[in-house]
Image (tube, rainbow, N blue to C red; front, side, top):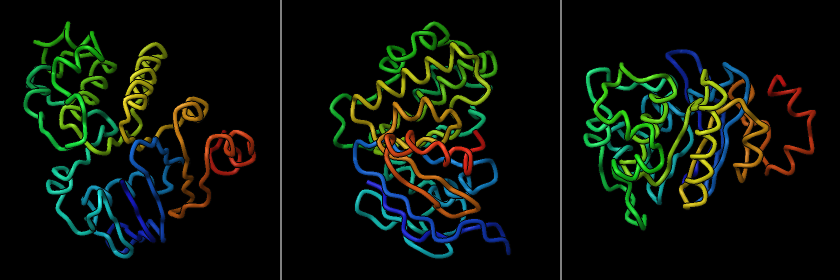
Length: 234
């Protein structure tokens, strides 16, 4: 589904990524781990065309997307749940979900609609007429996930989707991701709750100072707690 080879990128004269490799197969859940400032957000911005690809290659669903504009990349079937949620304050919940509805994954058996999102997050159904700025932080996070899902993406990317949420709301988000995984959704996750990611993900990639320093499955990551101390600050 996604193949990033030797990706280099950065800001102005500053290089942040140095030859990063990342692969995600169809139906897999992969995590991108590392302390703050190690290049995770820069990698996402490069993937979505918000930063230029200085070197390397990015292939998605059989197409070389390096150098594509962000809107073209989105139409190809990538969707992001951004850090900070970024809901529109003057749109209602239903308007968010209606405005972003698209058909970008021809292989999906049951397309995502506003009503299906309300099944996944009943609280959003209860708040369907509320504006984005009238929602709690947890409700905004649910809306950000729903907004990405109604594009019917081939690859769903979540950037710190549980950051700053109350424990009960975090549990709802984890349950949502488990449901999406069971349905075959391909997912890339950035999050700091490594223990929860072990049960969710197929593989993990650790970034350190702009380089991929380790990759492996959940069993390998769980078995080597030295990696946690060295690279994850746990």
